[in-house]
Length: 386
Image (cartoon, rainbow, N blue to C red):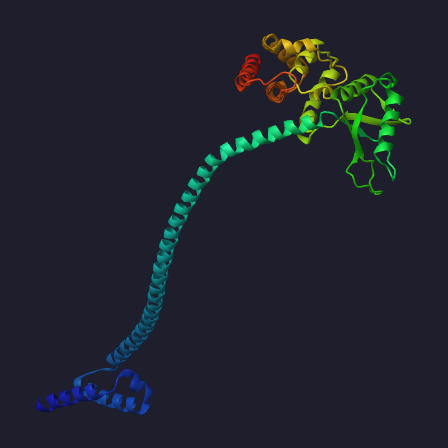
């Protein structure tokens, strides 16, 4: 018994002192010696070869499991490394997110400041607009007054378009040219003594041979009546010529008046196409309110005489105008396409402006209240029709 216990203790010491499986596999001599000693002890203790094969098989299985565990450990290490990388990246992203949040906060503060500035600027602009409205009214009133003065200055002027020009022209030659045109087209006006030309010239004053069309001739008469007679005779004749070539005679109007005349063109053209003739008292009445340059503004099929007795019956003329507005609206309603817009344009362009631009030397000043009453009546009449 003592020997067996000593052997067991020695075996246990040998087992404890024996290297692990890897070291034994790495040193074949030690593995072989260890195996033989173990076999001797195992035989003495009663081990059989079958038990040894089972043990060997169990060692192989444990070795495989150890390798699998090593692989799993390596995989876990790789996962840990990846996890550390992900954690570092998340930390960086968190830092970037914090920076972005700070920047967004800064941008938000700046936007708030900008909104406050924009609001202050808008308030300033609104204040400027409120201050600008009376200035704009004064500017328009000044422009209208300037236009009235300019049209009044141009009242005696007659514009000749299409008259051939040559070098070396002067006032005398141009005056002779105008006399020739009057004698050629209006022989009944030649004998009248009030054909007195105050000034005549071409415009623009500088002559250029490269100009495709001849410059216009502006003739200023001493009296407005002569210019109106010539224009009336030109409308009645229809075609005015100079040495057989057609020319045009027109009033010397301002740019604003010419623009208003162009806007009136479609109305008169449609009236002509419809072969509709307005009654003769219409221009007589309207001309008592319009400036004296407007006879040249009316088409040729409308008579343009101005009865002098109407000037002494202004109140009765106004009452007649109120009764006539509905008739005029019915005319345009039947004859003009897109009647509402054109009719409103007529209401503003003619009835309001014409009553506002009366000349002091003919009728006297109509007060603003009367002018506004006329315009208000016209607008009410318009919407009552349409």
